[in-house]
Length: 461
Image (cartoon, rainbow, N blue to C red; front, top):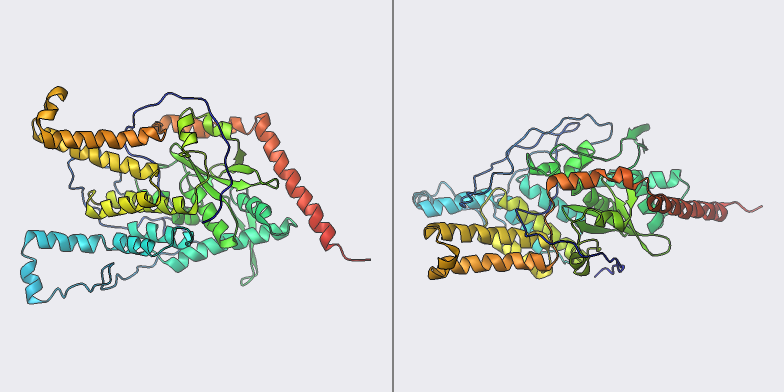
């Protein structure tokens, strides 16, 4: 298991609020050589009764943007004639099969098997991984591709990451730096800060590559969940606080660089080690180093959340693996009910990390759905009369217990408008003395490494 640096942060106590609605943002996709066109896919309506909620993810045509850098292509992949557990799909021309299809339950199950194939395949692939040591690039691809119904090329995805890693190496050479963990992190951050020049040795061309930028359009994935995918970011150069830090980690993995994902309410960012071994926080959505105090300034991080490691801590490899399972679960329940398969994903995620807030939130919302249905079914009795209906009362107690788990970890709901105000406050943060000093310290460390590299490479007289 990868060792993580200890994050020693304290904060004052904040007011706690009851959890309302679904949780964190998940990851991302796009297709086409030079534009982003979300792939057509089947989106069945949930079978659950959720009278208080709305459908969050209607299809939407995403923005089109021509890019000067090689983009990801998305060929139509053919679904193999096997299900995720390796069994062959029955012959649909067989007379016995046709007879069975006249049964409503059998037909419904067959339809589910066909439509859920990509999710079950992704889960099967993740189950084969060692949570302490796995390829994040491959796992991220599997999760995103499941939502896209296996229509996305892994080779194209991997090549997109490799191109960025190659660009980082070119920046490193151009800056006159020797490769180490600090300098490579420094050069990855350049991808989020400025236009960089990429030299294509095959075509003998120098290509200007624009920086990754925050996409304010559908930043929550309300119109299309694939707007949150790293593959969409690779193609359009636009992303948000889910895809931008995750792509940073994919590039870091390709380069063999250590960096960690960290969480905040409705948000994620990157931490890496400075020259002194201390942790530095990098905000990919705007390309700046930020202070822990700025993260806490959102007003939705309390001392309980920090103490429990819910926020501002570095995620271990196992916790990152659990986050990927949370992504898969979130993607799945956007198209299907919270069924037995969803429960299996949930249990595996919590087995790896019992404190995974996103999974606990989805579980609590599901239990609330069940409780509401059962309470409505017995005529919506008064709270004091609910114990007279054992089944409904038990569902109510399970729902309350699920939310108490979340509250115990220090979660506080952050409204979208508050999140946007906090995120935009980075413009004020970068002008503060502490932020100026952090950037200056980073520059001094890089400059000292440049001087050392020059002395080492200086030819003898």
